[in-house]
Length: 318
Image (tube, rainbow, N blue to C red; front, side, top):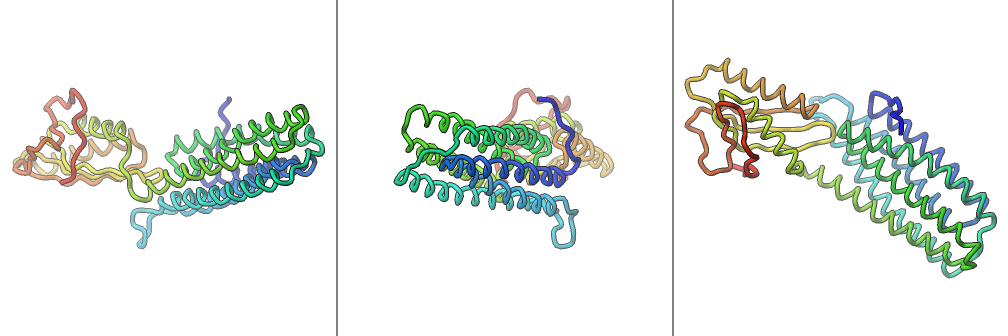
């Protein structure tokens, strides 16, 4: 799909997301109103949560973009995770509400009133969500925004639900089994519950300062080695990613006779390379003399060429 021009700020994307959610909600409730389908009603209920989540995401991104202050010296980035956890919780609650609708539809089944009109409206809403969900997910990944990623995943889960519902509800008039409507609503509830759990799990991991994946850690180590020529060793490397900001700290061992200016130049070179690769990065480097070299294999030795033949083992804490 062609790239759409996006607002420069994440907050601007959240504003568009709220508008798109309202459009989808209007279409889905119209689909339920003209059809009377329990499954389409369940889908409309889920979209209400999309609207609430979009409003919450707008608040979180507005807070996250605030600059650091005397009370939050590391910035407000974790507000995005709070929003994502809240969204996941709402999604789980929605799953139970939809499940109740499915049970009521099972015990009191009734045929859809005008299924084709409802299906066309629901399909239109699904297309809107598909386009916007892909845009949000790509923007969130490019900008390292947990709130945008969580929102994109939530919207796309709504898309797959919509596709299944359109196909399933379309079959009801042909197979003559009204309870299929309730079965589809139950499947929607299960899918929504799965998405809510995944959003909560990933967001809680961010709040707990979970380390990035092994591939990212290896990239960081390679950058330190490639740009740390003149130093001897790096150890106690710790990193965490909070929203769009990467926090990284480590100890850098340099020759004892090296001047402060020379050690500072090495640190600057490493910091600039890390920021060029990782984006917004807060780097803290503790310089140590050569008698602080570690011999236990947890350290990252820096060859004079700055070339690391193969990624070494994961750095252990001091």
